[in-house]
Image (cartoon, rainbow, N blue to C red; front, side, top):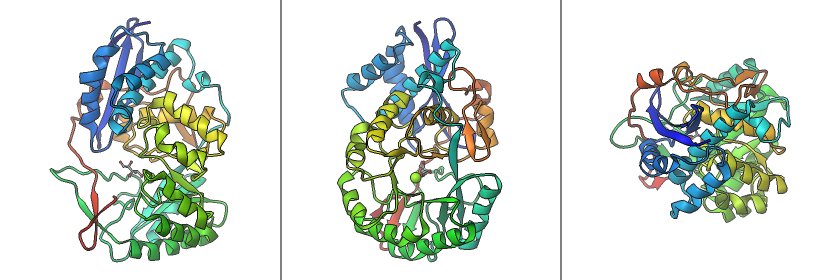
Length: 403
Ligand code: CS2
Ligand code: MG
């Protein structure tokens, strides 16, 4: 079955998404998310200029060979742009294969290992009381796990604390990124108190998580991990920038708080040491930014050998196509941990009608053949691309830091 058409569709229903749509000679279509927050057009161009032309005429069933053709054939390998483009092709081919086989993708991946996919939501507040109310909102919606982010006294803004209770979008329009001010000392003083208040209010059953968002040194991360041990976090996320994998040895020496890293990593080689040395407990890589279902499944199989579980990234800047693909993978792997679920807006859902449903703290991908997501191109056209950039962070003395 040959690929007859390959098109990238850029749309902005409240935020930008890039989607690859493949169509075979018999009219079967497949979708792949190609969204890279703040760098969307780089992936759209990589696909439309350098990848789509070479896909025409290829066998749509040859998923592994196509992955190798695009990865080995790129010469300039790895990195977020290349691996997001490859992910889009890979995901679209799995969508097609499921439709042709009349099976939901999870069945092609070995069938279900669990009843549903446990998800976590994002609770945040400028103050501890506001944050606690937000956590209560997720508990009331049936969530079994909640990420907790709180404002830092003395800082005008901080990661993960937005204006809207349900939807958080850090990217903003403008020629240059918004600049946020960061203070590690203030943060390390404030967060243990916020997490302690959440544990105190909601008891031991509710799984609590916190995202440091790449901002500490290894020894600072060790201090925070140790301070949070009494509150039994499900995971402490991105305590340090993930590139220096060996730095997690320092964190591991000082604290038993579970660690989750990976949403900015793009290949098995970026996380191989983290997994092999069990320097993390959860690998956060996403289908869209790590080469697709084919490659992420390889990472998760390596992770299973070392008792590392999945914790796929699922922010709103990953489209419903990526979320659906993640759910099929989450359902079929033995070492599932937790799935992030930042609900998309109704505007986005209208462009990407989908079969996945939330119930009782779980997401279910549905039984529709393929991924179970479509793209309403007429609706997509009504939302033209709007340039947007993620913020940057500077320390109080002006030094550039990690956002
Ligand atoms: C965050 C993301 O969801 C998370 O864990 O780290 O929201 C991240 O900030 C965005 O995906 C960046 O585009
Ligand atoms: Mg994160």
